[in-house]
Image (tube, rainbow, N blue to C red):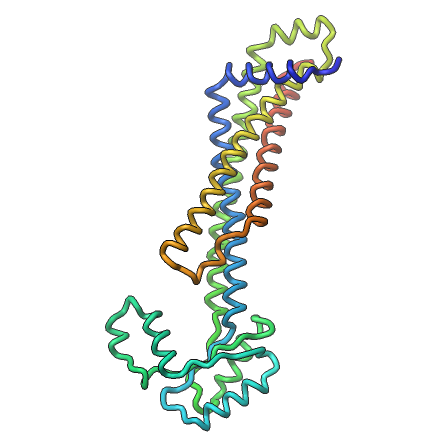
Amino acid sequence: MAVPLEYAARETVANLWRNRMMALAAVLTVAVSLSLVGTALLLRQAVSRQIGQWSDNVSLQIFMKADATPQQLGDVRTMIAQTPQITRCGYLDHEKSYEQAKQVLAGSPTAIAALTPATTPTVFKCQLQRPGDAPTVAATFNAGVPGVYQATSPSRSIHVLQQVTNVLQLILLVIAIVLLVSSLVLILNAIRMAIFARRREVGVMKLVGATNWFIRVPFMLEGLVQGLIGAIAAVVIVLLSNIGVGYLIRHYKISVFGAAVLPTHDLVMTELVVVLIGLVVGVAGSSMAVRRFLDV
């Protein structure tokens, strides 16, 4: 006996309305847990993009001493040209370096007051073929090269950022998994209550020859709908989060974090993953309930 679509839809809606409070609890739990999953995925992608941008823009900074002579500057330029790992370099003289220092130290008026263009060191900002070579190249320029104050790379800061992000992502995923298990149990209980409420109808349908699938499909669709609605709510939350981050970056002109806003393609793929997980949770919960509590 085939399952008419109209019958399955009508029974699914009836079951959801009959157990609406339990269904609402399951939907909300699915939405919250999948929002955390989506947030963790967005966080990972945003940090990866941001780190990639930072690595591409500046892989190595060579700070010269404030009193470095033109001869020493020329020797460092020659050394840079002879370093195969370096693809190109930009040079900030005293004035440009002083302007950059004022931007970096904008929150410390005392530190800015202690600086002058003449005492601000000049700096070479270099890009490398492979950002991972930055520590090795920096060590070369830090090995007593005349006129060089210090060569630094953001690799250490990037490594710390990656570690913090990994820990935060792990925490979000653990919480999300716990909530997903909770939502699966709630869906299972909602289906169990629907089965209990319709036990007489199920008995009558078996007596008139209804197939197992004819009886099971409405209950399984109920779990599927709960998972889908929760996933759609999570998609909206994740989308609003991405839009909110973009707005804050533009509003406060935090251009350094511009890459943290995901492009449409990456956002759509993340949302599809969230929806897929929601469907899996809904189907899994309803299937477990039907197999355990529906005697057909």
